[in-house]
Image 1 (tube, rainbow, N blue to C red):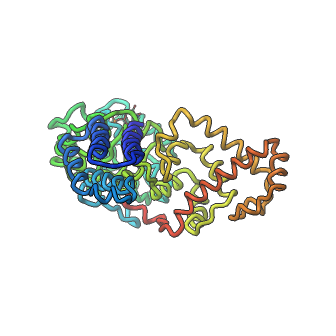
Image 2 (cartoon, rainbow, N blue to C red; image 1 turned 90 degrees about the vertical axis):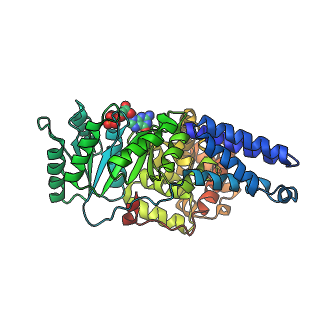
Length: 446
Ligand code: GDP
């Protein structure tokens, strides 16, 4: 993923700088030049990048650094703050209230990924206890209804549309009415796009909006347009009351950083990013955790979200409860490997962990990791309940380790390696201790 490259370049620049014995102006400048280059490559606007660099130089006091304070931390924090500033729209995202049916209308140009994103959005909420439904009010593009129908069926989400009715307003109104009667609490209306911004598109959008009375209008945009996202987001905002933005195809384009910062500059909150064609390649976008992850500092709230995606709904409360109490046992590790193997994609989950950048888990290496998890699970199959449920690794004495190795047909050093991995993960998950776990209904801001 392109953002992983951006994050990787920034992390490397920080690392190189902190490896230097003395941090003087020259070393700091080199580091900032590297970061600047990486951001410009991601198509972030030149002025923003230049201001960021100037601000960091102002904030970072070289004398403090020379005095042996943790240089990397100080500069990383300054980079973090500045990147957050660039991406912060200065306005919180719109919150949908549970308990009454909400209507969400999707708008965007044709090909932006609007229809795909409608289903991803519905699926995301379905996993969090909502009862979503999809309405296809796109009568402009041939095949739009079939596409929505296919996606909705795959995700087991009810849908509404027509092959014969050509009035999008009528379809939108009928669809919303139908699903209100069926007690759906999140009714998503997909509207037509056009190849370019044109009067007919905006007029249709306005008409559907007046008739369907959406609680929220989400504008979907393709990240490949980079900085040009500013003009497009402005144009849509001026025609219809856009409450939130979703940026798609962040997996494939070098210009993702530009699109994110440009949209933020229009003061529109970005709520999700699309990171692939599949239903679960969809991430909640929240500035601070996002930047934190970009810089390899981890993203625990993203991890909670991923757990909600990957772990079956009935197991989530217990797992989150255990993690927030600081219990990470070998059994939990076993069950999570099992879930990840079933649901994947591992890279997405690991990139949320502090100390892992997405770059360290490249997509090509997923098969290797899967084989490793399976190996570990075979070893854990040879453990007793007491061993699996303990949070104290000390109970695994030498003789027990030898028994596990014999039982699973593995070498002692492989069992030790698995236990090391467990300890490392336990340390990471221990950071979740005390973390406030969102309740089902509290995910409504998404
Ligand atoms: P619409 O015309 O705006 O409704 O766009 P579609 O939903 O039909 O999507 C257009 C193409 O973009 C399809 O091939 C989708 O699979 C693809 N697409 C949508 N979102 C993403 C994404 O986040 N990443 C990638 N790689 N492809 C996407």
